[in-house]
Length: 258
Ligand code: NAP
Image (cartoon, rainbow, N blue to C red; front, side, top):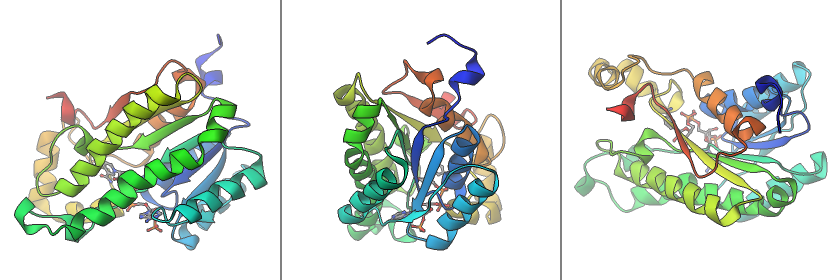
């Protein structure tokens, strides 16, 4: 196991599936894993976005294949992993990054209808469960790992987005439970980002009051770039994290430190 730290970040010969890999944090993770040498399968519902990410990886000399799948559909997830194994021979890493937080799930608890819960739980929590379990056999055989993209909302409450917060607390619980059940063959970890500049948060950039309140809560006094989440994910997927499982790495500029 000994070796220079940079060698232990080397993901050559590893195959990684990144959900929500077409834009935002997932795009940065897909490119980060590819930079470390991994073969990457970015997946989402949008074919254009994932295809552009795969093309960027191939243009840089890497290996990538875009596959579309809706994480609410088990059959599409099974097809995604079958296609990955057919094309690249296996799966070593699953990054469960896809997430949703639609307007219908925002607001005070008494204002959110039950429907606001369904999509958020189905994508953020059950989607991650479906992908991890669809890849379980591959991960066990190859000593792979899962990295779930949770949120500070998986560790503390956030105002007016209780379905999202519930889904991310669920994802943190799933991470810890799966880490126990799948040890010692498979490691399962999570990252918990604070606010990151993506299409999910574009309303914040325009709302000065909200932006100020986020910066006040963040000791590092800024909203992160997606690439700043990719680094910790690459670390957790690599051999540098060989004794790390069941952990939640905060990537929040200090939000949850206070
Ligand atoms: P984003 O830009 O909106 O990207 C979300 C990704 O998820 C897209 O690629 C989207 O692709 C995919 N997706 C959504 N629903 C899907 C479905 N049913 N099936 C398959 N793919 C689906 O969001 P982001 O900000 O990068 O967020 C990525 C992850 O980080 C999420 O889990 C989010 O909760 C988490 N996070 C974000 C922040 C932040 O401040 N941005 C903070 C903490 C945690 P399609 O629409 O094409 O399917």
